[in-house]
Length: 196
Image (cartoon, rainbow, N blue to C red):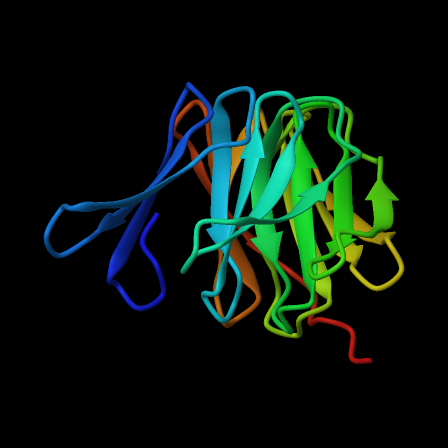
């Protein structure tokens, strides 16, 4: 993945190492070690100061991009972490795992805030509405669930997919375009987000 500034490229390997590259020159800037299994997911904090990584053993860690030092370890997942997302306010980390569990964390302290267990198969993708508190999760259980991020309540479930939900895009018109393993694209009209 590329940093917000476009100056750095982050890569995670099967050996558990994370490399930070200068995107313009291709020079290796740093190598981050600490994971014991393959890196499955990477994301940066909203301000770009931290890099967050998820691995095949369920490990989640945050790193200081400028120094390469580990900042926090997020403990709680017991299966591979496939997807990571940082809340729009920059205060929470959301992680989705292969067992269908989604966890919400305090990004600064690594305290677990919520554990969401409504999916029955792997979480493949996580996204937020522009309101900052409506979370969407796509899963190998052939559903997309829409959550209230502050409470962990499921607002509704989109079903009817013939295969795993691997990716989706939310349009400003509250439409969602989904892409499944069979190459089919479906378009859904979502209700307007609920105001605070």
